[in-house]
Amino acid sequence: MALGLITLTPAPAAERAAQVGDADYAGVAFRQCRRYIALLRAAIGLEPGGARLRVRRSAVEFEPCIDVVIEYDDQDAAAAAYALRCEREAPTRWPEPSVVGNDDARGAASDRVNGRAVKEAGS
Figure 1 (cartoon, rainbow, N blue to C red):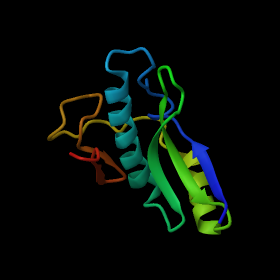
Figure 2: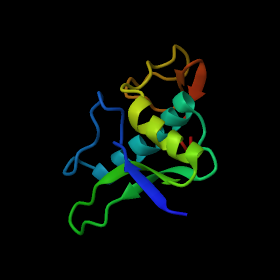
Figure 3: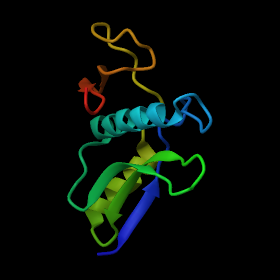
């Protein structure tokens, strides 16, 4: 098995992601990444065997970056196709806050995508 890796952003492309140097960068970036993974799963579907979405912290010694990555078996057609879909078809915006249960416009925990609830991991 050869491992493929695609680095995604920590948040949808048209949204502001936490930046290195921001106050509590690591905490905010990690929460954004977990929420983005939930959004990807809601919009594109769960990872097939051979593919895995995860949060990755770069090995840079000073101010490491935190991103979402998709690791996949590049010999597995379904896993590779899923990885490419995540890269090409990822939502570009956070979903609108639901009418009930989420007053935080930056999206705490209960947004909806395609009629399905998107929950931040661990919430």
